[in-house]
Image 1 (tube, helix red, strand yellow):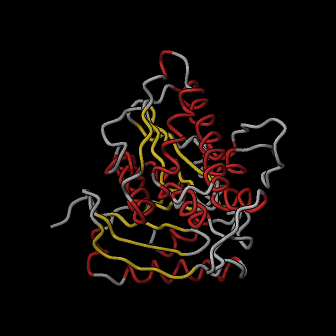
Image 2: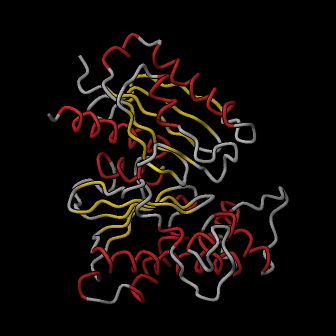
Length: 315
């Protein structure tokens, strides 16, 4: 019999995934829908309800004791609402209340997707055994989350650790968030590709202009592609070092599509980190690739649900 069974939702601009997950992080049941991201809010919620409905139809559902949600953000865990940048139909949308109704009144815990991935990496992945960690998603955007003193630290609204919007270039490009020179504006996949194209990089015969294509060119020694990744690595190093100096993390875990670039990213990142993490208490900071892959959001949401279940069990 599976113990500590919980439900989990991973909600993003591309897909809505759901699962039943046991207390060891094993996914037992899956469900998924494409996110109708450009539709109205209730249409998006309909897709969420379909995923929850598949989970409730499973014979294992009766054992579920809580439900965790990792959502694209911003989220407001204190209000139970979400306003994902990439889902314009959801602005201050009462996601927790709607999911609680769909799930038959189960306790629901909401966290940002970066925090969810952090929870997964700390529970089962590259940050396991580390009491103080920063985990990052470097992909279309740059997000993250923190583990401090052995505990997930989502902050009051569920957004703590959002490193992508630390400014690392005071006179840098305007960021869609309203600030300037953010880590995301330099190190996200689209911005790596944009910078390479602006500086003369030419895609191959297939016309692929993605960051993955830039990474492939960098592996072949293309100097413009290499320079674009080096600039991204410098921005990440500055943001990681600032975080480490502030809260004394000892490991930074990097996942997401850009994180899959391998040595093209990690070699200049580790080199640049030496230029920014200079104080004695951050000089041994480790930077490593994430391990949890595409299931990280679900496993992290499950970890949040397990924590919620433990909290509600305390009288």
